[in-house]
Length: 241
Image (cartoon, rainbow, N blue to C red; front, side):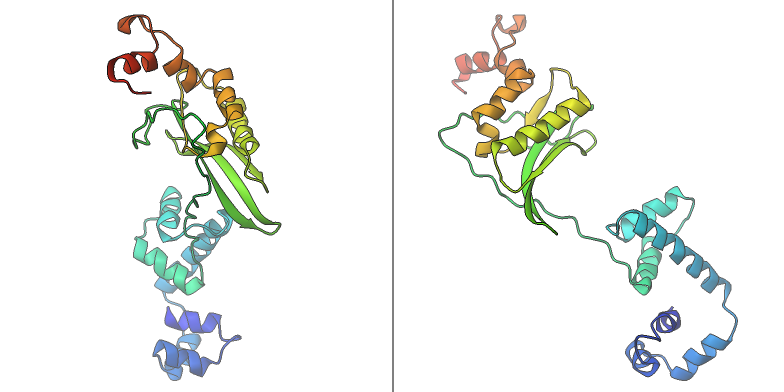
């Protein structure tokens, strides 16, 4: 593999320098070039081409673990270390997952809803629990704010919106896209932080309009608890808002 790496970059760097860096002899390298390629070398070369294709088709973001999963789906059975080694020799790298940057700030004058998920970000079926957030990303056109809506069942992004300004319309557009694409039933919890974009009157009115959490927990009455809403019931019993 070291000889192959040297051979692939021999037009860019002196063979002597690469042999010294990789701790192999020049005579060994030239002897390797003149003898027929081994079965293992043929296999590695073919596998590297498949890896290159997977890496390219997935926009260069897959690292060895995901490349290995994709290979397995195509019938290849190779360990993660083998895949990582071939990727390293081929000069292929994955792109680390971008962490969301905290961008929203709460407004103490805005009302907030109760945290129904309690950090349990899982769902048993689609369109039961959505989560929203805002981040900013660097693009060729400059910094842009990105609002997303994720279905916690599959982690699928069901709605998104980008703009140069971080306004309430950014989250409303993302939420509208999610509603149009998924058409959820009324029993859906929409979770977000307490940023002023999500607690604004316009966004809360959007939730009320489409009967999401505001309807199910704050308006819909239940005979089991005396024909009042769950929020009113808890307020009467515990004093919680």
